[in-house]
Length: 215
Image 1 (cartoon, rainbow, N blue to C red):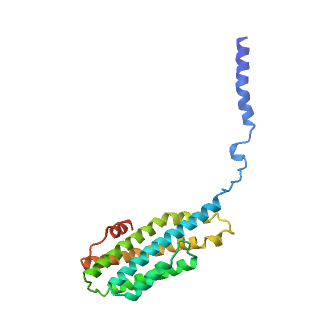
Image 2 (image 1 turned 45 degrees about the vertical axis):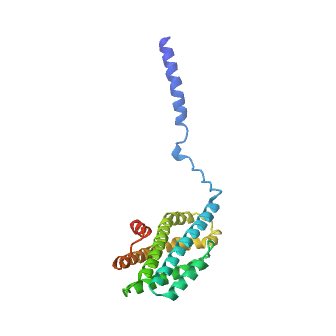
Image 3 (image 1 turned 30 degrees about the vertical axis):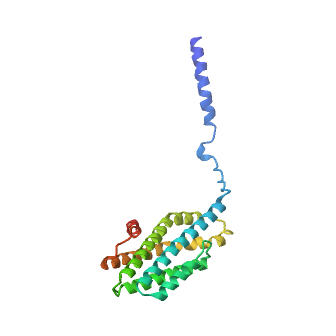
């Protein structure tokens, strides 16, 4: 009788295992289709708008910085042009206006660098104005650096974007595409500005020092 009980117990233990053996393995089960996020489009649109706002704010700083430094160096026309472009920039800037602001940043930075290369002598008032411009240049550079992560995230999200949405994201695409080049050029401008400041006994502002350390 005892042997019979043991045999029945063993059979009961084996039954579930045998039943499980008949089930298909997890690897053989078809994978479920992924469910797209209902807020994906809204997220991309939000990322686009955030990138544009950040880029506009950064370019405004750089243009105003270049305006002050150009003025300090005696480049009155370049100073006025930079300030006018900065004033015209808005948070809802189109791709076209962003391209124009980038060209203005490049042109004003080149003008300032070319004038600094001539080693002009600045009076006390000009030095103070130059220092103020350099501080704002540091602020703009820090904003550029802060955009790097969001720009990469936006570029990654574009891979799953609906083709119908892409035309609405062109300003953000431009920012993400142009940012590495802009950041590199701005870093060079800051280094040139720093070298000129040191050679002319102009104290380097904290924001400029912080920006150069973050490069």
